[in-house]
Amino acid sequence: MAAIPRVCQSLSPADKVQCLITQEKVVIFAKPTCGFCRRARSVFEDMRQPYIWVDLTQEKDGAEIQSVLAGLTGARTVPRVFVQGKCIGGGSETEAMFKSGVLQQLLS
Image (cartoon, rainbow, N blue to C red; front, side):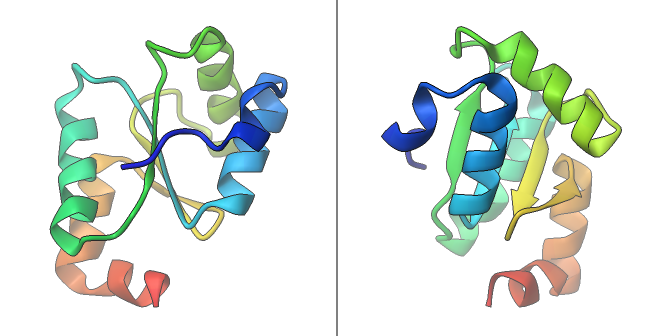
């Protein structure tokens, strides 16, 4: 798990989301108390795949970022998991893609 890159930190919420999902291979927008968020994170940890974890409760513009994600993905729930710039869904979808091997293909 890595921190938000400095180049993305001071941008507006919409630009921050775009910066992250275009520059990073895996980005998880999440909240630490969310079980589905922890499940998504554990998939990437089990794969030893580096990822960016954006804790929306710790970001000063976390609510705005969540609104941007809702507009971008059609869902306001967390986690919102992005791989190679595309939203693959939440925790359940991430686990299902991992179990089917699709996630590994997206990352190769």
